[in-house]
Image (tube, rainbow, N blue to C red; front, side, top):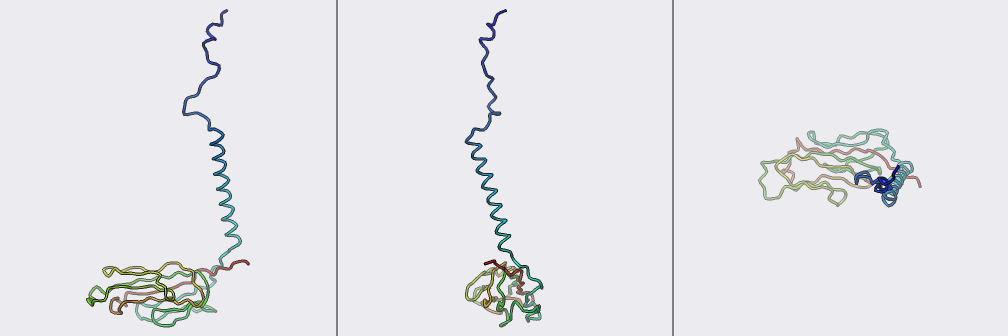
Length: 179
């Protein structure tokens, strides 16, 4: 019996290129990514656990407009906002607030003053509307503090249709941080 045919055979079988195993560098990279993801998830859980938000028990908020143009207030004890003037409110409680509204421009207004509606927090402008051709939404979610004044200001009162314009605010949550 001859073993000549075995001399030409390779000692190990090579694998096709697609089925190669990852090197130890690739395994180390995968392990590092998994560990970072686990740490991120753990850190997020700790933040949610130790910095909870207390959801407002009773709805607290206010709405001005469209018509009749007066503030309609919810009245939990203690209140979260107080009206100061048309289109202006003073915040009485720290918290996360949803400000919402709709501005309907008066398309027949032809005065030289440009159309501009500003949502303000104290003296700072939060949002500006300048498109006078369509009804627009205004607002967002903001962290507000006791003493802040929120207001909707118009360049001219005749630039908006007050029977289609309104502003509202709603207390969503009071942050209670553990110290």
